[in-house]
Image 1 (tube, one colour):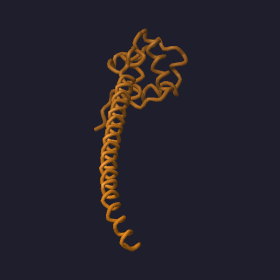
Image 2: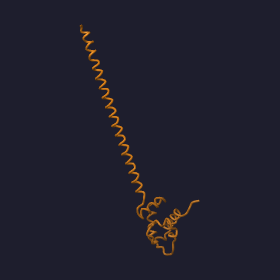
Image 3: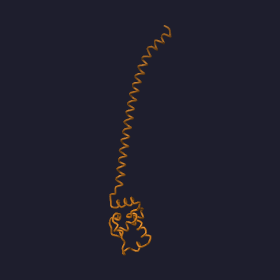
Image 4: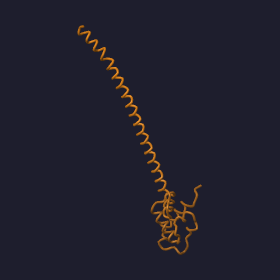
Length: 145
């Protein structure tokens, strides 16, 4: 036998062995890839569930913050709904105190609490204060047509 025949015999013996090894490697790679893919799918699912849970928790926290839990909270929410600033809130609180109203939110409901009498303190008789009170009254009780 010549070297050439020996080489071909060696190749004929090694090629099937190499092919079987390649097939084994291919199967192992496919198995690993599918396991890897399942792992990635599982991690993505867990991430989506965690993010969804955080979003729901955040929504509930925001909802709870918006719900007033006290008389003062109701008053602040009413002021916010009517676009009243802090100066307006302060004036309404002072007016409620002057009128002997414990809950300033009632000023948004009862127009009779806005009636003025002769018993106004000097500070409330000033034109600027009366003008602001008139403006607040109109914002709350007069309907634009």
